[in-house]
Image 1 (spheres, rainbow, N blue to C red):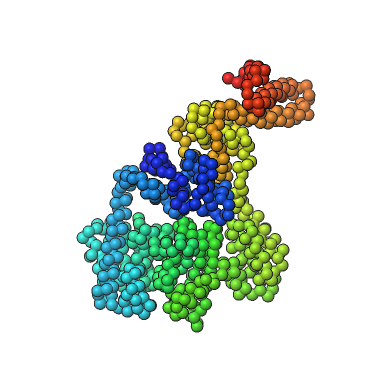
Image 2: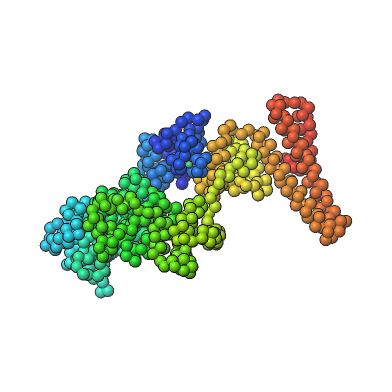
Length: 630
Ligand SMILES: [Zn+2]
């Protein structure tokens, strides 16, 4: 991420993490660090810590941690470059405009910029067509009929693509080459190679990216032309599964209210937004893509799904539910009641019943499990077999709830509503759960205390600057057996490599290559470590690791010896050899333990005892003779 010498690196060096975090969290000084209530999980007592010295943050409650960029990315739900820009802005650091890496990249950026510009022109063109042409007049009448007045038309940039077949083409042709016109998706090429307008005799709805730039169009046929809805194809600037209609305008509302309403089409999104509910987006199509959910997740984890009530909409709702639950969303479902004999989509419902009635329904929208239970109850529940079918319908959803307690609550609820024997349902649930347990990530517990004292001490020494760091890394590199098999093995490995690279250590970068548990341990150790570790401590920690290894080797050798005695006899050459090995290990162990004991005594007295020192020296010498010391 923040490469040495990069702009990001420079900004980070100048930025003050306390100041940046302080904009979001009320921080109190606590020793050398600052603490406050964690913005990433609910808590009453502060477990969120910011270290100005290490320029990192870490929450002892939920385990989130990182540098100033990680914090801003998490809070602002933005990407890395944006975080760099924001941090620079907050700290008053000026940054040069980023240069494209290569000519290739520059060319692509240029092409994208040109396509965006072309869409801007097309947008202006479509709007003018709607306002000022005879054909446009008919389109306006249609829109009025759908309850979209002049205000709404201009607010949502609605326009009209005329029937001519090449009107837009003629408008754009002079400025853009054919290749680019076709690539934009606004213009198509027929089999004979002739160019023509993709959208003809259609109402146009501009589709914008997150920052509000028009990158595609969704178009509805004015007459009976098929298909009824025709959208822009995928292009260098538009990827359907990465875009949510109306997100650019909904962002603020979603953040403020911490939930989003998900509808199917742009007409629905417009209707809901016009009802005064700005936090609405449309998936534009019945299937919600995983990327769209991830995009949404950057703004909120709470969603109300309000798809069309027809069968397609219903199965779309249920498909989306699975995806949303997997991504840890809290989901409610708004299923609007039919209007007379008509099934109501949000657009129709608001037009007939008004904004207030819709708002009311929205507030009452049940959680997804209640929605599903209601669906299951519509099934025939008269026989045991039928009940099994209903349970089989529900189970996949319940299984997708990552939280075990919630899952269990829902199981009880389902059992009550479907009048099932709860144990039977639970058995089904746990059977299903065990079948997929392997894919389930275990809930990360706070593991750091398991990392033993010596390991912690050495790890924090590896993160502290100074020549000792390199020396320790060298020792570990030469003798990786010292840390192999330890809980913190991976942390040792990456820190040793980083320490030997002679670049200043970026803990947050090291952390990115670690698994979640190791990453947490590392941050936790970093924040708890206070004093710089002196070499004597390092030595005694290394001794602890050596003793641990000697014990393991001794145990292995003894096991092997017993086997050899049984299979080859107590006096076989193999057994005899092993006996020597064991004796040797025991000698080493004894010497190490004696040295450790004296070290501890010296430390406890905290003063030099000449006699003890004399003994210590002797032991050191004998260890050297055994080849255990350099
Ligand atoms: Zn937290």
